[in-house]
Length: 174
Image (tube, rainbow, N blue to C red; front, side, top):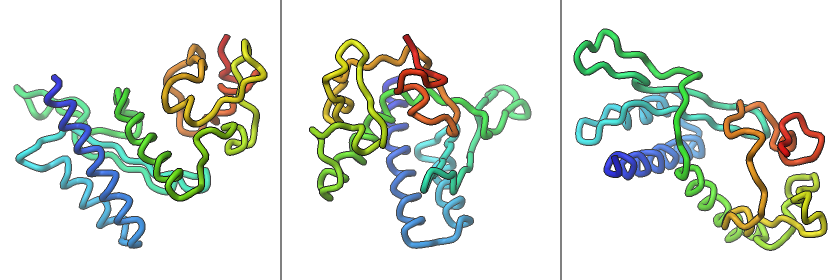
């Protein structure tokens, strides 16, 4: 199991780099699709499926799925393709990608790890038990913010973070 997780991390990072470089070079979406499909179909490192989404300015600018979400080794005719509703358990892989992105912003002088995260989000984020303590990016990245996710773990892409981080939000938990 661990062997596949490590491969998955490498593939995810590789897909992110290919997608980012293709997008920054303004290559066609067909070329991006071709590059991402090739990741799934590599004979030396097979990957069941891959879903990619890019969001710019709060809008989904690219979304595509590749490979199979269900594989029947005895009867390939029963295989099911990955689609927009395929769920993945990405767990800690997303933490690595987020931390890398955050540290790139720190290097560029666009993010201060110790500033109130509300300055960047445009709304106040506090633990209701410690309302005078600002939540910072450093706290979020190191899991020391004391925020909980009891409102849920899985939200559609169009659900605002504000809806579960701010009291009174539609997904705010106890």
